[in-house]
Amino acid sequence: LPRGTTAQGPGISTRAGSIRFNTDDRVFEGYDGEYFVSLGGVIDVDGNTYITAERSAGDDDNILRFYNDGQQSLSVGLDRIIVRTPTYLDIYNVENATEWYQGDEATAPADLINDPPVLVYYGENVYSVDTTGTFDTDPLNFPTHTTGTVTNGTVDLTWVRSSFGSFNIKGNDLSLELNSLNFNSRDFVLKSDGSQDLNISSDRENINLRFGDSEVNEKNLLRVTSSGSILVNNDYGTSDDFVEFIDYTLSNLSLKRTRIFNNQLTLDTSVGNAASTIITEYDSDNGVLPEHSGKFMVEIVDDSTTPRRQYSEISYLVKSDLSDTIYVENNKIYTNILLCDISLGLDASNNVTLDIVDVTGSTTTIYTVTVVSQSIKS
Image (cartoon, rainbow, N blue to C red):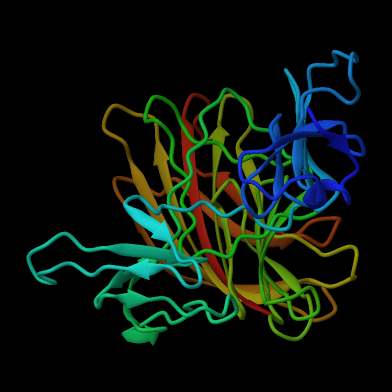
């Protein structure tokens, strides 16, 4: 076979079908009437886009390497795929559509209504061919419209849909190690197969729900903590001022100007005749009592076969200097007999406490005490 350098190629023969050996690229070539093209492997005319099956002849490393414009872009081994310079991963659904190419001829269906459509695609869009003709010969005048009909060359192209399709991954585990993960999607849906719960986990102390189009404009709205609390940014849009909205026990609901608290305790008269629970906890970090006034409801039920019940409603006010509490019992209702006295006080740590004392003199009764309070934030 003739042989020579790449530059000598066209001078050897101008007859289509000629074969030669390229001494520069060390490949066999065939002349197609315009170019000498490689006869071995996959390679373009100028030799800068190709695929190899080993790094060098005889290496036997069993790795496919893909080169685009002289740069290695992809390598595929037995247990690893490495993509080196990607910016986009486009998943296309272009079934029954051909790619638009400058100067190509296109034939429209004889009957646009009843015959199957003729489809072409380019980039992110799929079009129907409505007239027979030739596409624009300028490669830069590709179709770009996303609505209606536009003439390209002498062909009327009507936008049908985007060219994107679905992408499904099936596997056992998928692990991502990323600095950030951004979704540009109309819907974001997580589903399980129905056989077990869908779990979302994090090893961080807090998970934030944020809004905004960049790191500069992003704003925090909600925060879920590892202790089970949900916090709301009370200064959303300006700065971060997180306030606990509800905790995992579902006993403390905090709004902007009020807090709703519920709790349940037990008074066992065989152990003692009194019990107490904290209604408002003193904020020792800031040296303040968060709520100085409000009211609470108390229901007391004993453990008899036919339970006796007592209901009390109390309004209260704590002095500003935390020296005392002022309260009044607005209502007291009970079946059979009065079960317990109810009072409000301050403990040694300045917490507001509800105190329950049995008045029946029993040493065998167990009371279940349910407390619901609503206080006004200071």
